[in-house]
Length: 148
Ligand SMILES: [Fe+2]
Ligand SMILES: [Fe+2]
Image (cartoon, rainbow, N blue to C red; front, side):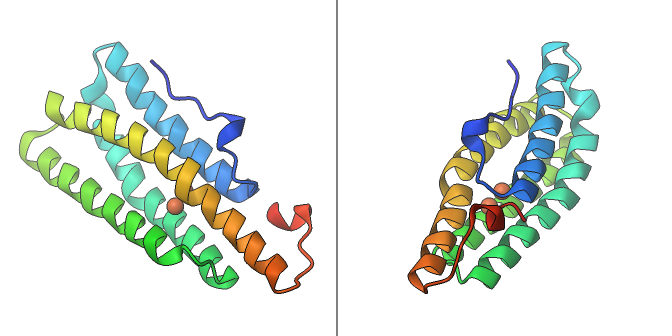
């Protein structure tokens, strides 16, 4: 089973789509390794990546929300915090157990489910409400403005 980014997941923001694709690519590496019974070998690298990349990704999204006065940003930021908390729980588990089957399976199911659901709900909503709000203020929003 692989995790593939699909065009339906596009939010319309190129930088955001590219970051999501990179996260998908890393999770897919874990899924591939699991299929080869080598999941444990990529756990450390994935955790290290997620720790830094998710912080940057969330910070970029939150800066976008702040600069666009996004109405849904409070709940969205809470979801990012929940992700960080959950990741820290798995890191603690990893520090105690190493790359156990439980750690690998928790990473696999949680990351895949959380990411897809978050992108198609909150991340898309972030862009849509920001554009709607801008239009409501009479701002001249062009499609190309979304690409920045
Ligand atoms: Fe995102
Ligand atoms: Fe987000």
